[in-house]
Length: 330
Ligand SMILES: Cc1cc2nc3c(=O)[nH]c(=O)nc-3n(C[C@H](O)[C@H](O)[C@H](O)COP(=O)(O)O)c2cc1C
Image (cartoon, rainbow, N blue to C red; front, side):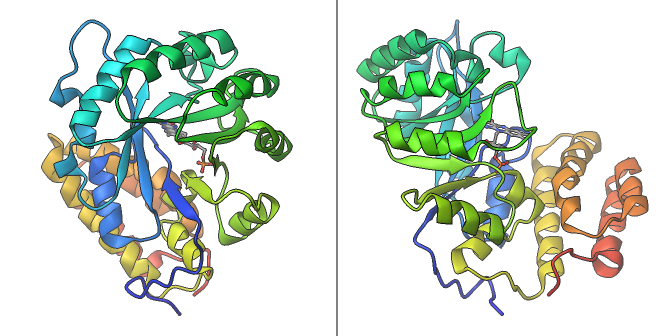
């Protein structure tokens, strides 16, 4: 059995925490890193660039260094306007961030219909012009996070030769299209085709939910050494540690999850105004975390129906102490 305090890094792979807007904010990242190990870096959920006003400190509160003391963070910017992007990137550079990530993956129709996020992927010429302008005016380095395209993977094949002309830090690829959002299968053949063309370091991202998944994907793509995990670690917060050590037996899993939950609850209670915000945030977490346990529908319903913080905490703590059965046996 391993314990989290005795980490033995079996793998030299680098693991990235995926940006998950609504979930992995700085409060979450701090609480997570207090209880779990395994990630080398977190990409923060996107911050939209500012159109008609200068960037202010309050716009980038999620990445204030004092709010991010436990985990190395890279800020992410959502933008289609080079001057706005560069203004924010330079503001973040002055704050100490030597690399920022450009979001070219967001599939939300609200975002994509305005040619932002994955909605920009069919427009190779616009991306080309954006990179030309941004890289001429921003300090620091640029990392990209993108999908295969908005409609089809032909889009990324058109785009990669353009990306190869620019000095990018890395390209993170989630092998789905924007239209797919998070449905259907990841297209590993299309990802493999990208590897044949791309000249930048690549980070793979998509559907790594277990050590087995990691072994399969890292076995197939032996040239890749950087991996990003999102929903998989929200469901099983031990996953990065399990991947890093190569074995999935961990002592006291239930108690560790309970302690993490407790830390997060109190950290959000300090930050958020009023119990309804707090409970909304905490209940959201169970969308993923619940999948770690044998079904507990009745209790889950009780958690979701709680409108008072004490009631909610009582239900959750009783769950952890009595009913909770992790799907993975240990
Ligand atoms: C609720 C939610 C919020 C997300 N927020 C962001 C975001 O802010 N920026 C981004 O680049 N990707 C975002 N993503 C995409 C994830 O970073 C990741 O690419 C996706 O979940 C696939 O990885 P996974 O299969 O490991 O979860 C989000 C995904 C979800 C489900």
